[in-house]
Image (cartoon, rainbow, N blue to C red):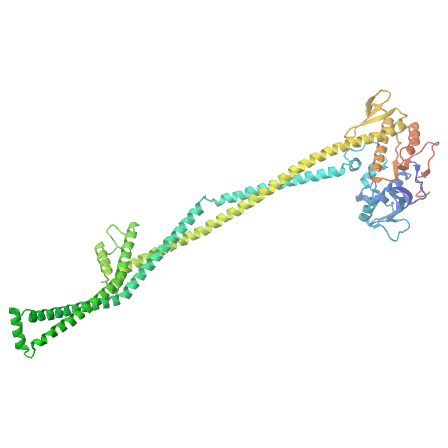
Length: 615
């Protein structure tokens, strides 16, 4: 960047400041007594470019406005010739400020002010950086030596780190350590949450296997309840079936009784008819035959011997009827046996119920009934025998089975209560187990997060180590470069008495004395020589800034750089400054006075009483 003109109004000392047609190359000398406004020119340039100055911070910008005025403005024209650009195009930046804190800025091409490149403080700052690649801090550290003691640049300044190429890496390393610390703190917080969740898990007091045992007990109770329900249902069905089959069984028993009677009757008739026929026809010479014949002749004289054959007919018919009733009785016995199976089944059920309940300890030692314990074993056996033979009537059956039914109902109710309690316990335990699983899942998730953060921090530590190594390498390389620059400048300033510098990583400077043939601490040489050496270091930094970032011709402002130089050193320094670099072409030097025999490309003389300056 090369300054071509400055036009300011009410900035610091000057009511007006108008510097035109400034030379692009050579030394611009600004001289005058104290408080004559020499440094104002440099600060005006600084304010125009960056909206602030070295001596006035952003919170006190109203101090830039000339005392007694309400606003100020400044416009500078400059060119920014890049190595890869065929043209040296000129730009202008205008900045205005009032006492109310209103601050505006505009960047534009010199011949196209109507279409500015950027408007506003932030937009202009961004656009200017794109053009010049220089920020305020870098400008102060490299191209603007304010009116102050020339000392070693601070090794940790942002500008110096930028020149060395390590600012971005240190910024990344800082971000890495910030992220690491953030993840460490986050991991501690996660561990705290894990501890809290673990306390909650412990508070649940879960017992291993308790849910399984409770589930097994619940399933067993359900199974027992189902068995009791089935037993009662079967028992009731058998009772109902017994009562339903009793009338039919009674009918078949009656039929069997009548059939047995008539079978006997017809058997007697058939046997008598056949026996009588046999005696009358086959035993003529017996006394029995004679007696029967006499009885028949006396009582039935009309029956002749030829009628005896009817006895066979009667015997045959009676035999047939005997066999028919016999077959009917057999059929009735089958039906009676079939219907009697219900009674036997019911009796077996009662026996089984009694046996299972006695095995479970439900019967008293005295042999009480399953339900009430009121009937004796003998009574119970008699009842079972009657039921087994299907001889018990419905009312008696109800009296015999009602206690069992009531007992089974009580068992059902007890099991139902037990199942209800177990179900409630299962719901609670399952909720507790589910909650514990959810909490454990949270713990696992938090532990996974911690592991991820630890893994990331391990990578960050590796990255930080690599960045540290690269930073050290670049720092040493930067020091070598600065030494190379200084080795070209320092002999010119010191008449070849000092040529080589040794610059440590913290920018501690030692100089090689050709006379002593050894490196010397700065404290071992005169203060004037120290300032010459420091000026050479500052100029070397400026040169490196141009090489690394600016890549164009650059102006340089040196405010009172020779304040403690004797006249000889000042002359020597002024004579060699224009020859230092092909890039630092426009050098602004501010001093109270200059030697008379030194030629400058442009001279500006400032006076205390003069508040308007035009050159």
